[in-house]
Amino acid sequence: MMVALSHLFSSSRPTAVKSMPYESGMPPLGSARERYDVKYYLVAVLFIVFDIEVVFMIPWAVAFRTLDILGLGVAGGLLEMGIFVLILVVGYLYIWKRGALEWS
Image (cartoon, rainbow, N blue to C red; front, top):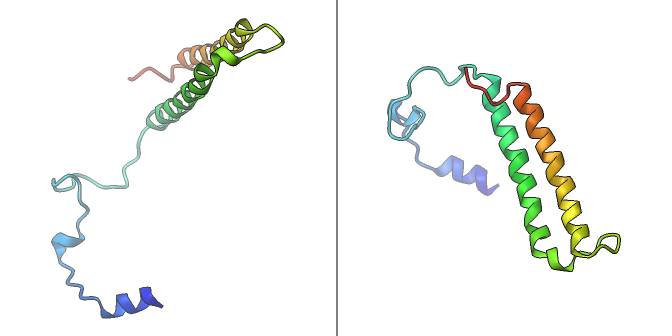
């Protein structure tokens, strides 16, 4: 009800300038409906994936001295992170071989 009342009693003076999209103070160039190459999205997703994977390393580094995996002590925690980084490297090599990091 409050939203409806504020809409009814607000003062609105639309103009052509106010209706234009704002792009850093510059007039818009071209259409907003242009198609982008899929590589932009692919690079964004890859960045998010590898960024999240790095975030998983922070708690491991904080708890490194207290890790005791399979009774191996610190070596077990190091082995665990080594396997994790190996999986990341395999993923990185895969996307590199597929050409996802090449710009043409």
